[in-house]
Length: 77
Picture: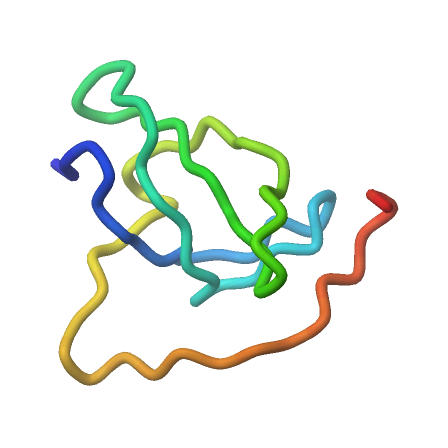
């Protein structure tokens, strides 16, 4: 189970959004122990679309995780 406002990482690609496994997001709502609403934020500070994902699609970040920057290639302007 994840906590509200916890930073987590995707465990899988989500092709329709352009998000990839390892992308960071924050838990902004907990619908039930297995379903979370998460928020992605671009390096510019612009909020990306909110997504509702299962706990299987997310993992806690750890001390050995590395943060990177890449362009988000989606149809969203």
